Image (cartoon, rainbow, N blue to C red):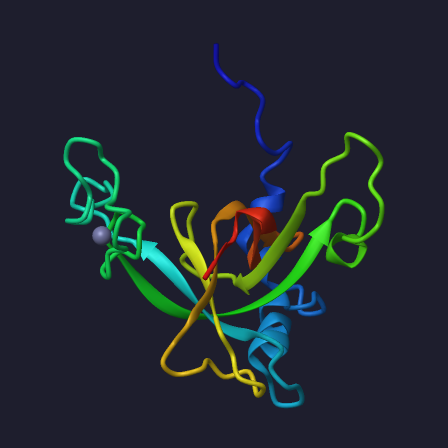
Length: 193
Ligand SMILES: [Zn+2]
């Protein structure tokens, strides 16, 4: 059994000339850059953070750190490994700029102290908005560094919180172009040091 129905009723929507001639469409990539990175007339609202990217071998598998016990497959938890910091795999960290906010079904962190009805569960998410071409995957981590009062990372760098992507959403314009990314992370799962 195949998926017989065509994706589009006609091919007109994919016509190349019609994709480029809408100059009145808001360019969200540019808007994003202005807001997060700062533009000619705006201050940057983003903050510096790290994306911890797991290293891959030639077969695209994660590469186990030397601290991982070959019989149990678990990293040594007695003394945290200074290479992988407990991940159990080799990784590299790359700088990025993100804008983050909290979301929750009932208003997020702002309503954290409100009384919950019996049986309901608090799930707060932190959303990291990232530039459309940011290389981030579900195996990666988002690392927040301690910042000084001006927003610059404190040196020596101090990894303050580590988030694991739960859902990565590519926000696209009506014409299908990726405009920015939103990475949803469960606040409860954050590792704080
Ligand atoms: Zn290690």
